[in-house]
Length: 204
Image (cartoon, rainbow, N blue to C red; front, side, top):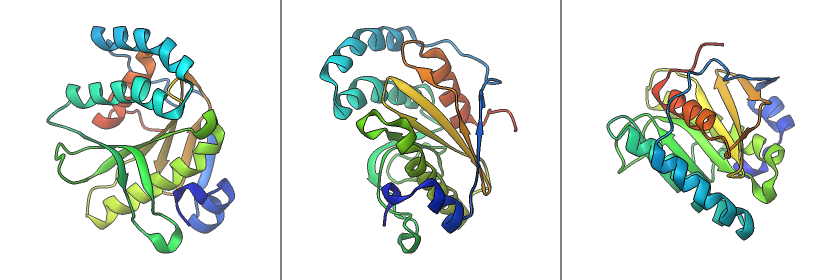
């Protein structure tokens, strides 16, 4: 069993999560200005990513530029990992490879203090990706606890590159934002990610 094998039912019964759906979970996040070159890149790349119509294409053209810009914006605060093995507790299925991880630590040589787990929705199916993302978030929470890192919310993102959905994990309570954000209007997406990695999301 691995992250991709989890379902909502397994998360509730085997992991003990309470899962809540909520609209506009991140509506209180203050918007920040989108870097001009990133806005230009996304405008240029969006048509090509749609015509390529592959997960790899959307990842390289739409997801990676946003995350790389986030890392470059905070070089002394966060690190960015892509496609790494993240096995925390294989006995309960918390193991596998993660698409992207944002860590609240600038060390790039080794993963420390994961704060945001981001996964690409397979076959453009956002809903099907939510259980896997939640499982990765649980693993990040357990990883931090084992390392003696202070308890903080763990965030998650499920995205097709064009459509983005955000999640939050506080203890055993997981909240899924029902709001869908589109990369055509990237300012809210970039602002939420920025607030996540800086710990500036308003308390629930």
